[in-house]
Image (tube, rainbow, N blue to C red; front, top):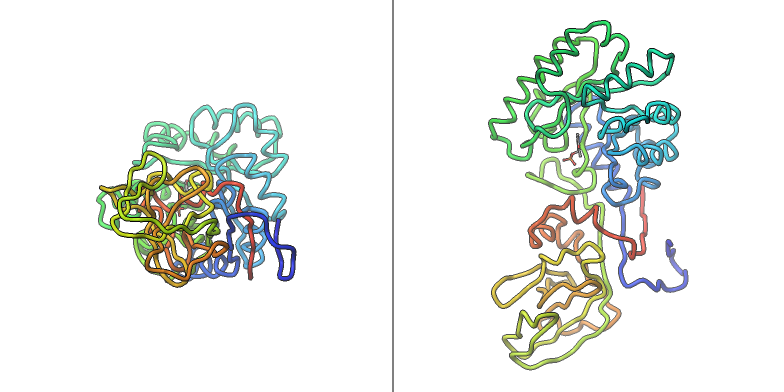
Length: 372
Ligand SMILES: *Cc1c(COP(=O)(O)O)cnc(C)c1O
C-alpha cells in the first residue's frame, strides 16, 4: 500500500499523508498542559481514521501507556499494536464478553448496573481483570445515573469486588468554555471522586484539558487534538497530522452559464476553467460540501492557491473552479484538507466536524506515513 520514493507510480487517485511525528508532538503538547496528570490517547475508530497499527506504536514509543477505544474488537487491535499498554473499552462490556475481554487484558468501562453485575460475577468466580466505572454527570449518554452511582457507592463489598482502576465521566460541552454544564459536571464528578479516594479519576477529553487544571484529574483522555483537529482554540499550537489529496483527472474550458455536475445545481458565472478531481463522498468528502448557485461549498488547494468547488460532490469526484490557477494540469494533486485547508474548515464547509471527516476517510486512499 505504501509507495516509497522511487517506487512504481501509485495507481490510486487519492492519497493521505499521515505525519506520526506530528501526532506524537501533539500528544506531548497536550501532556505538557497537564503535567500532574497522566495523558492517555483515545484511539477509537481506528485512531480517528489514521490507523491504529501505526498510531499506537508511535504513541507508545513516546511514552503513552493508556489507550481508550470504543469497542472490544478495536481493543484487540490496540493490544496487538502495543502489547504492554492499558486499554479501556469505552462502550463497556458486551453481554457475555467478560472472559473474552479479560483474555485480551481489555478493561471495560462499566456503565450500567447490568454490566457491573456481570463483571462482578466474573470476578467472584475467580476471573482476573481490571475495569473502570463510568458515572454520567450530565451528558445522558453512557454511564451510571445518579441513583445507580449512589447504589454502587453504598455497597463497599461490591466496590471491593470490582476494584475499578479508574472512575470516569465525560463532558458534554467542553468545547464551549463558558457553558454552565461544564462547571455542573465538574462539581458532580468531584463529589463522586471524593467518595472513592483511592481510585484514579478521569474527566477531560481534548477540549476538557484546555478548560484548565480543575478539570485535570489523574488521567486525561484527548482524542481529536492528537490528530490535529483544533476544536475551539489554537492552544496549544497543534500540528497537522493528516493531509488528504486527490489527483486532477481532467481540465476543461467552458463558457459562461455552463451547468456542472449532477442536478446541474451550479452554472458558471464567467468563462471558466474546471478541474475534475478524483475524490468524492465515498472518500469521506461529504456531499454537504457541494456548491450550488445559492450556496458556497468547500475549497481545495492546488498549485499554491485555493479553488472553490463547483456543483455537487459526487461519489468519486469533485469539480473545482481553477480559472484563477491557470497552470493546473491533469495529474496535479489537489489538497482536500491539510496544512493549507485546515481539517476543521473543510469539515465545516460540509456542515460537519473534523472528527467525521477523519473517521469517514474510506479505503481508496494510498496511505503514506512520515515520521516520527
Ligand atoms: C471520544 C471520547 C474522548 C475523546 O474526545 P476528543 O473530543 O476527541 O478529545 C474522550 N472520552 C470519551 C468518553 C470519548 O468518547
